[in-house]
Length: 400
Image 1 (cartoon, rainbow, N blue to C red):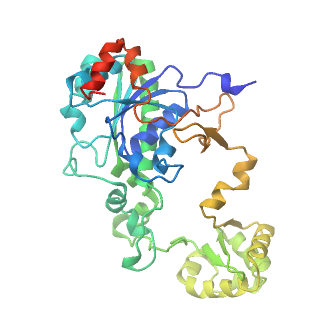
Image 2 (cartoon, rainbow, N blue to C red):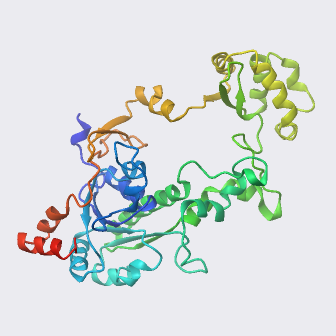
Image 3 (spheres, rainbow, N blue to C red):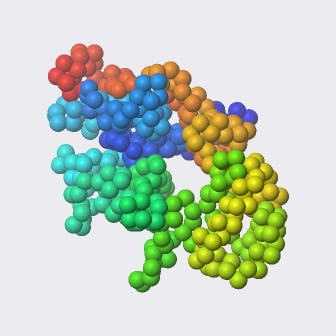
């Protein structure tokens, strides 16, 4: 069976997105992966500002390449009435509107859920913002790092000193919001299938990240001491983190229970008597005495190469990993063996793209081109019934 020819879950669904940066584009790209038609509305001349973040992918921006395949780019200057009429015509036929404009901007343009629901009762509206509607932070600007700070992420990430806090190396708050927007839209589509009418999905970056902070939040419940920052190590389980080998390499390993601790002492360190050492005989003791235990582990590993350490860890059935850089991930043998890479077109030619996680045996995800700015404007206008003269006029007045 050729799964590429099989129906996809969102075939026939049209999504209009007033999007920029990461959260909304990541949401809508995943909807496109499932077959949805995504029409990305961009500002004429400049477009999604993420297009200009860098030029690392054959002249294209890395963030934009990641989050914008399989979309159609339509340029509209929404400050002009004629452009708003184009958008209105699109929304009349659409299933979903996704937007992450500045706080209050969509409502000021008449694009609040209440206004749209009165005109288009079938339309699902997904609003993504930093802090959500209402509350004292409603109008506050929000970028990923700022939400990592407000959401407590920085308090548990990085080294032990106050000056050693570290942000995540990817846009984790944007990604969290994009994931909840994606699942929120899917649930709203299911609900509409039962009720026949659209609903609103309100996604806050802050709430999305705080949900992911559930473990440290509950660890610090009722005024208890929060988990300390521990670099790349686990803050409360030990040994769990990076350790140097004798050849200068680094091995990441993790122990979760006493059986693994005993196997680690006997088969990896070749010091079985250490398992019963009173300083290390339970996880809370190993964590409290981690400096002493780390010295013993580093000394033992210093006599082995990275490969030898990993070989012993594998024999002892201790979870471990290599510390890959980006080149190592591009060449990862597991991704290659599972054939997880595809080629997609772009304005700069063919580019590799990772298949979305969660493989379904019934269909192949949509993996279409990354659009140039305004690439589909004329075709979409023609589809809406605009003639060649009207399209030329809209271009001349800068509405598209």
